Image (cartoon, rainbow, N blue to C red; front, side, top):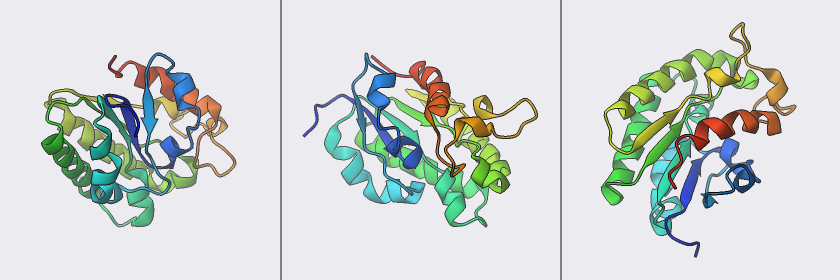
Length: 180
């Protein structure tokens, strides 16, 4: 069993594929329990398996993109409500634990869903604004070109997952919100 009080990364493949995440945060102890294709409903369903046993010191969440990809008729408010439910469930078990949400990213492969990502991100940020021990990381805007299109140079050939340049954008933004 991993040590307690680590920073727990949960969510979808953008975290799962960050195989060298510990190298990006050498002064922190990172435990990555994300899994490919994860939706917020999946995280809610598996919370007892991917969060509770680890007794983390902080939780960093990247999820939401796949919710829309799985069902493009979802409204941003529905995905935001899914996040709120996950947050409430985690807070019941760990009332004081710091929780960080990393915004949905603007993937070129999902360009048609970007308006929904943007609105859901705004709703999640607003929800977290008055919650204690929370933070929101806006990677969405940092990954855009000046014209508002996704920066394709930071993605793999699938135009969905990031290369090292993409993670290099994420690292300082997330680092600002990590707890020692």
